[in-house]
Image (cartoon, rainbow, N blue to C red; front, side, top):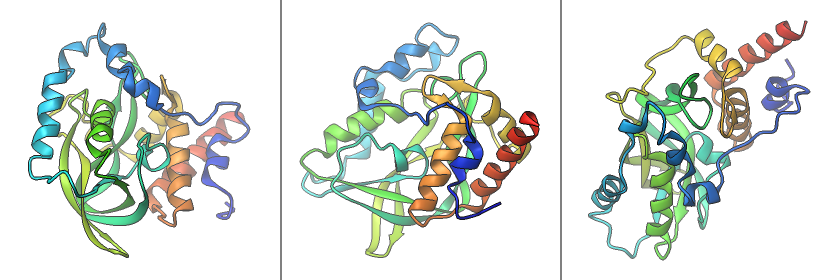
Length: 242
Protein backbone atom coordinates (compact mmCIF):
# COMPACT_ATOMS: atom_id res chain seq x y z
CA UNK A 1 0.00 0.00 0.00
CA UNK A 2 1.28 3.45 -0.91
CA UNK A 3 1.73 5.07 2.49
CA UNK A 4 1.94 8.54 0.89
CA UNK A 5 -1.74 8.52 -0.04
CA UNK A 6 -4.33 9.55 2.56
CA UNK A 7 -5.60 6.51 4.42
CA UNK A 8 -9.17 7.67 3.84
CA UNK A 9 -8.73 7.18 0.10
CA UNK A 10 -8.21 3.47 0.68
CA UNK A 11 -11.00 3.10 3.21
CA UNK A 12 -13.63 5.03 1.30
CA UNK A 13 -12.37 4.18 -2.17
CA UNK A 14 -14.69 5.47 -4.87
CA UNK A 15 -17.74 5.51 -2.62
CA UNK A 16 -20.02 8.52 -2.90
CA UNK A 17 -20.54 8.55 0.88
CA UNK A 18 -19.32 11.85 2.33
CA UNK A 19 -17.20 12.14 5.44
CA UNK A 20 -19.69 13.54 7.90
CA UNK A 21 -19.91 14.69 11.49
CA UNK A 22 -22.06 16.49 14.00
CA UNK A 23 -22.59 20.23 13.53
CA UNK A 24 -22.62 23.01 16.09
CA UNK A 25 -26.26 23.64 15.23
CA UNK A 26 -27.12 20.03 16.08
CA UNK A 27 -25.41 20.38 19.44
CA UNK A 28 -27.22 23.64 20.21
CA UNK A 29 -30.61 22.05 19.56
CA UNK A 30 -29.69 18.88 21.49
CA UNK A 31 -30.34 16.69 18.44
CA UNK A 32 -28.52 13.61 19.70
CA UNK A 33 -30.37 13.40 22.99
CA UNK A 34 -33.68 14.10 21.26
CA UNK A 35 -33.00 11.18 18.90
CA UNK A 36 -32.83 8.77 21.85
CA UNK A 37 -35.74 10.09 23.91
CA UNK A 38 -38.18 7.55 22.47
CA UNK A 39 -35.70 4.67 22.30
CA UNK A 40 -34.90 1.84 24.75
CA UNK A 41 -31.91 3.95 25.85
CA UNK A 42 -33.99 6.91 27.06
CA UNK A 43 -33.68 5.96 30.73
CA UNK A 44 -29.89 6.20 30.52
CA UNK A 45 -29.84 9.81 29.31
CA UNK A 46 -28.29 12.42 31.59
CA UNK A 47 -30.54 15.33 32.57
CA UNK A 48 -29.69 18.98 32.06
CA UNK A 49 -29.32 19.35 35.82
CA UNK A 50 -26.87 16.45 35.98
CA UNK A 51 -24.80 17.83 33.12
CA UNK A 52 -24.74 21.30 34.69
CA UNK A 53 -23.60 19.79 37.98
CA UNK A 54 -20.90 17.77 36.23
CA UNK A 55 -19.50 20.83 34.47
CA UNK A 56 -19.68 22.94 37.65
CA UNK A 57 -17.70 20.27 39.51
CA UNK A 58 -15.14 20.21 36.72
CA UNK A 59 -14.64 23.97 36.93
CA UNK A 60 -14.79 24.33 40.71
CA UNK A 61 -11.13 25.38 40.90
CA UNK A 62 -11.11 27.48 37.72
CA UNK A 63 -10.53 31.17 38.40
CA UNK A 64 -12.51 32.34 35.36
CA UNK A 65 -9.52 34.23 33.98
CA UNK A 66 -7.24 31.49 32.64
CA UNK A 67 -7.76 29.88 29.25
CA UNK A 68 -8.85 26.22 29.29
CA UNK A 69 -7.51 23.36 27.17
CA UNK A 70 -9.58 20.48 25.80
CA UNK A 71 -7.90 17.24 24.70
CA UNK A 72 -9.17 15.77 21.43
CA UNK A 73 -8.26 12.22 20.45
CA UNK A 74 -11.01 11.28 17.97
CA UNK A 75 -13.61 13.30 16.12
CA UNK A 76 -12.78 16.43 18.12
CA UNK A 77 -9.50 16.59 16.18
CA UNK A 78 -11.19 17.06 12.82
CA UNK A 79 -14.58 18.37 13.90
CA UNK A 80 -14.18 20.30 17.17
CA UNK A 81 -17.33 22.45 16.82
CA UNK A 82 -15.72 24.75 19.39
CA UNK A 83 -14.65 28.37 19.19
CA UNK A 84 -10.98 28.06 20.08
CA UNK A 85 -7.97 30.36 19.87
CA UNK A 86 -5.35 27.80 18.93
CA UNK A 87 -4.36 24.17 19.09
CA UNK A 88 -1.20 22.20 19.77
CA UNK A 89 -0.27 18.52 19.59
CA UNK A 90 0.19 16.73 22.91
CA UNK A 91 0.63 13.36 24.61
CA UNK A 92 -1.37 12.05 27.55
CA UNK A 93 -0.01 9.08 29.49
CA UNK A 94 -2.13 6.52 31.30
CA UNK A 95 -4.73 6.19 28.54
CA UNK A 96 -4.92 4.92 24.98
CA UNK A 97 -7.29 5.42 22.05
CA UNK A 98 -9.60 2.42 21.42
CA UNK A 99 -12.83 1.62 19.60
CA UNK A 100 -14.59 0.66 22.83
CA UNK A 101 -17.81 2.69 22.83
CA UNK A 102 -21.09 1.54 21.29
CA UNK A 103 -22.70 4.35 19.29
CA UNK A 104 -26.50 4.44 19.15
CA UNK A 105 -26.79 7.81 17.39
CA UNK A 106 -23.62 9.17 15.82
CA UNK A 107 -22.35 6.06 13.98
CA UNK A 108 -25.06 3.53 14.64
CA UNK A 109 -28.65 3.09 15.81
CA UNK A 110 -30.25 1.62 18.94
CA UNK A 111 -31.14 -1.45 16.87
CA UNK A 112 -27.69 -1.75 15.25
CA UNK A 113 -25.07 0.07 17.34
CA UNK A 114 -21.81 1.10 15.75
CA UNK A 115 -18.48 1.88 17.38
CA UNK A 116 -16.58 5.09 18.15
CA UNK A 117 -13.36 5.84 19.96
CA UNK A 118 -12.91 6.30 23.69
CA UNK A 119 -9.98 6.81 26.04
CA UNK A 120 -9.35 3.55 27.91
CA UNK A 121 -6.87 2.83 30.67
CA UNK A 122 -3.21 2.09 29.96
CA UNK A 123 -0.47 3.24 27.62
CA UNK A 124 -0.26 6.69 26.08
CA UNK A 125 -2.15 8.64 23.44
CA UNK A 126 -1.28 11.53 21.16
CA UNK A 127 -3.93 14.07 20.19
CA UNK A 128 -4.71 17.76 19.83
CA UNK A 129 -5.17 20.29 22.61
CA UNK A 130 -7.65 23.06 21.84
CA UNK A 131 -7.26 26.32 23.75
CA UNK A 132 -10.49 28.02 24.80
CA UNK A 133 -10.27 31.71 25.56
CA UNK A 134 -11.39 32.38 29.12
CA UNK A 135 -14.04 34.81 27.88
CA UNK A 136 -15.93 32.07 26.01
CA UNK A 137 -14.67 28.94 27.77
CA UNK A 138 -17.75 28.24 29.89
CA UNK A 139 -20.12 28.74 26.96
CA UNK A 140 -18.06 26.44 24.74
CA UNK A 141 -17.77 23.81 27.47
CA UNK A 142 -21.54 23.82 27.97
CA UNK A 143 -21.89 22.88 24.30
CA UNK A 144 -19.12 20.30 24.60
CA UNK A 145 -20.93 18.70 27.55
CA UNK A 146 -24.08 18.45 25.43
CA UNK A 147 -22.07 16.72 22.73
CA UNK A 148 -20.10 14.26 24.86
CA UNK A 149 -21.84 13.73 28.20
CA UNK A 150 -25.56 13.28 27.47
CA UNK A 151 -25.42 9.46 27.44
CA UNK A 152 -23.28 8.82 30.50
CA UNK A 153 -20.65 7.02 28.42
CA UNK A 154 -17.78 9.28 29.45
CA UNK A 155 -16.31 10.66 32.64
CA UNK A 156 -14.70 14.10 32.31
CA UNK A 157 -11.20 14.29 33.78
CA UNK A 158 -8.38 16.80 34.04
CA UNK A 159 -5.51 15.17 32.15
CA UNK A 160 -1.87 16.23 32.12
CA UNK A 161 -0.64 16.58 28.54
CA UNK A 162 2.97 17.01 27.42
CA UNK A 163 3.47 19.42 24.50
CA UNK A 164 6.44 21.06 22.81
CA UNK A 165 5.39 24.23 24.63
CA UNK A 166 5.37 22.58 28.06
CA UNK A 167 2.92 20.57 30.16
CA UNK A 168 -0.71 21.67 30.34
CA UNK A 169 -3.79 20.42 32.15
CA UNK A 170 -6.66 19.71 29.80
CA UNK A 171 -10.20 18.44 30.00
CA UNK A 172 -10.55 15.00 28.44
CA UNK A 173 -13.34 12.45 28.17
CA UNK A 174 -12.47 9.02 29.55
CA UNK A 175 -14.59 5.95 28.92
CA UNK A 176 -17.00 5.02 31.73
CA UNK A 177 -16.47 1.30 32.38
CA UNK A 178 -19.79 1.11 34.24
CA UNK A 179 -21.81 2.39 31.28
CA UNK A 180 -23.82 -0.13 29.22
CA UNK A 181 -22.29 1.48 26.15
CA UNK A 182 -18.78 0.35 27.09
CA UNK A 183 -17.81 -2.32 24.55
CA UNK A 184 -14.65 -3.54 26.26
CA UNK A 185 -11.68 -4.90 24.35
CA UNK A 186 -12.77 -6.15 20.92
CA UNK A 187 -10.61 -7.85 18.34
CA UNK A 188 -9.52 -5.78 15.34
CA UNK A 189 -11.63 -8.01 13.11
CA UNK A 190 -14.75 -7.41 15.23
CA UNK A 191 -14.13 -3.66 15.21
CA UNK A 192 -13.71 -3.59 11.42
CA UNK A 193 -16.89 -5.59 10.93
CA UNK A 194 -18.85 -3.00 12.91
CA UNK A 195 -17.19 -0.03 11.21
CA UNK A 196 -17.93 -1.52 7.79
CA UNK A 197 -21.59 -2.34 8.41
CA UNK A 198 -23.00 0.27 10.79
CA UNK A 199 -24.10 3.86 10.14
CA UNK A 200 -25.86 6.51 12.17
CA UNK A 201 -27.09 10.09 12.04
CA UNK A 202 -23.61 11.39 11.14
CA UNK A 203 -22.37 8.71 8.78
CA UNK A 204 -20.70 5.33 8.83
CA UNK A 205 -18.06 3.91 11.11
CA UNK A 206 -15.79 3.61 8.08
CA UNK A 207 -16.06 7.37 7.51
CA UNK A 208 -15.26 8.01 11.17
CA UNK A 209 -12.15 5.83 11.08
CA UNK A 210 -10.93 7.30 7.79
CA UNK A 211 -11.34 10.90 8.89
CA UNK A 212 -9.70 10.32 12.27
CA UNK A 213 -6.72 8.42 10.85
CA UNK A 214 -6.19 10.94 8.05
CA UNK A 215 -6.44 13.89 10.46
CA UNK A 216 -3.93 12.35 12.86
CA UNK A 217 -1.55 11.72 10.00
CA UNK A 218 -1.96 15.28 8.69
CA UNK A 219 -1.02 16.56 12.16
CA UNK A 220 2.04 14.30 12.29
CA UNK A 221 0.44 12.07 14.95
CA UNK A 222 0.54 8.66 13.30
CA UNK A 223 -1.35 5.90 15.11
CA UNK A 224 -0.16 2.42 14.00
CA UNK A 225 -3.26 0.73 15.41
CA UNK A 226 -5.64 2.96 13.45
CA UNK A 227 -3.44 2.41 10.39
CA UNK A 228 -3.90 -1.35 10.83
CA UNK A 229 -7.66 -0.95 11.13
CA UNK A 230 -7.64 1.13 7.94
CA UNK A 231 -5.69 -1.60 6.14
CA UNK A 232 -8.08 -4.31 7.36
CA UNK A 233 -11.10 -2.25 6.36
CA UNK A 234 -9.63 -1.50 2.93
CA UNK A 235 -8.90 -5.21 2.41
CA UNK A 236 -12.46 -6.08 3.45
CA UNK A 237 -13.94 -3.55 1.02
CA UNK A 238 -11.64 -4.68 -1.79
CA UNK A 239 -12.64 -8.31 -1.20
CA UNK A 240 -16.33 -7.37 -1.21
CA UNK A 241 -15.98 -5.49 -4.51
CA UNK A 242 -14.00 -8.36 -6.05
